[in-house]
Length: 333
Image (cartoon, rainbow, N blue to C red; front, side):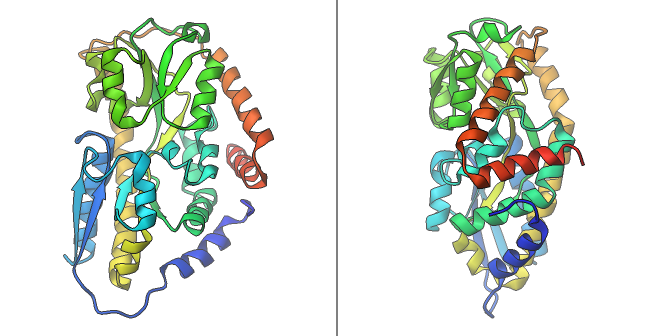
């Protein structure tokens, strides 16, 4: 698979993916899950999709939003969508990598130069081609990328002023090899844990630190137990809205168009709303939230991140190398 000419590939595959058999419209209930606490970033995307899908379908679609892992955790949700036992789920990108390893290209530390670079990639030909490649390989539909954020770091041991301050720090990481390797390069002691186990591990001291999207640190109230906060911006993350092939096949043409339009517009809303909120959330965490922060030298972290990028570029196959090259090329557009 090449990642140079995504527009024509995406267009042809989309036609194949969404060709529907003629059917009488029926009322459809869609259960949309996410694992994070209600009121955070996932809520912004899920709630707007619910509103728009019901409106654009003329009431023939009823979206039931299930927060807080009511359906499944992120580690299990993707496989469940493949099997058709979960309709839709919002899942952070790094948790897709075990099911579709090309996702790791987006997980690489400091892979995007800035947010404009990230959105050029995801909202352009590269992102369109990636979503179609994922559907072709797994059957799961990626409906919207949404907001692109940074994972901020927090810990209970010491302020982070340079990469050496990470030495030996027990850090919770998702079960993602890129993230594990990155924290090893930082000199920390990464401990892979599923999201469901993370709050307890932080409270009990099993781990001394972790990283999350900024809004999650607030919505999970980690500021109540973690005293130190660092805007490390080492990983960029996005949390796409996914749909199972089973639920997509049940929609008639009008409903399918309503779902795709709702997802597209909900993704734009998610991007705009969360971009607006992030500065306020960081100010809350280091103000009213009581977390302490310090100026720090990012150069050692960037150098470590580059070593991880080089390692993966050397070890992965042609598709991965081509995708990384396409991401880097978009920085200059």
